[in-house]
Length: 383
Image 1 (cartoon, one colour):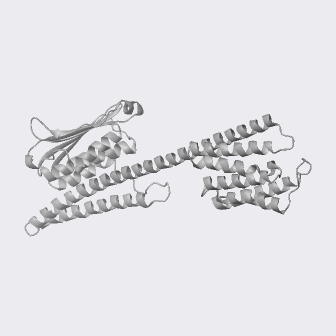
Image 2 (cartoon, helix red, strand yellow; image 1 turned 90 degrees about the vertical axis):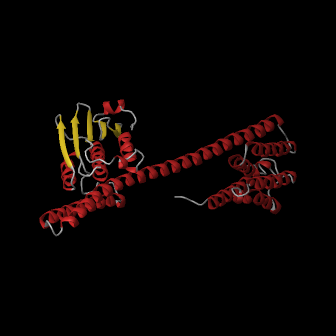
Image 3 (tube, rainbow, N blue to C red; image 1 turned 180 degrees about the horizontal axis):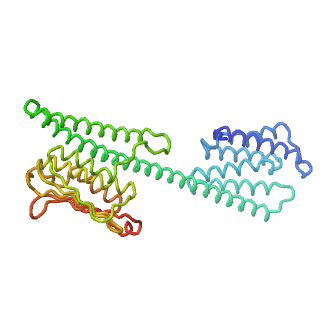
């Protein structure tokens, strides 16, 4: 159970006072005067103020040593009240700089030696050794405790900073997901809505096809957004019901883009095989962003999507041949979608190149490692 510091200090002070009172009963056997009313009052004044040692450690230490010195000067057995001053010195060492703690330790050693001088049969060698030894031990343990507390606070600050960085990274990932979902689907919806409006009276059949495409695309966009919201709202480690988009759904995406008026060809080289979900999602989103840019900046142009399955790598290429492209609208490489592509490639240890072709058109080429050995050889994304 956790206990409040003040309550804990009160219990410690009460326990020390009780021990001092019980130890005082042995004063006569040790050759010292018995505790009278004044002695009991001094015992209480040495130990009970320790309740506030956490709030004012130096002031409490000075008060305790002042009363202890008066107790020793009154001729009582010094050992009875020695535990309070030791705890006070230790508290100062745990909460204050070393030079302050050293001064308090020196004060305790001085009172301790004075107590030996007023003893009936003093053994000053033993008294001095005890005074110096106890002071140094308390100083050492208190300093170690203070440094440990400082390290713990520093660790908590680093953990908080790391948590904030992780939150920021997660927000960036979510922003990229939202951009990919909204930009792609809304581009298709916009193109199809324009087509439906244009042929609404002249070609109702084409208008109906466009409206059906709008309906299907909107439903898929809403489903992806719902899936993301389920992930954000989830309070446990359960996965969302709907699977993450992968390479198996690229064909559906290409059909939507074709319905938007772009001519897209899908080529696959090598034996298609299931890959890690993150790798498939990265490839899917890059193709989605590249085709969205084709719809935006090169309406009516022909694009080729090529998937090449290697032994340790997956290569994805989206090439717009340039026909119908508006060079003034081709992205320069600093847009959010292009930044998102590079960040995704970097996250999975891949490389990506984005830029115009010398013979005209625009190309996006992504290479992702599909094995741990290949991932260790990957480098940062390039553009």
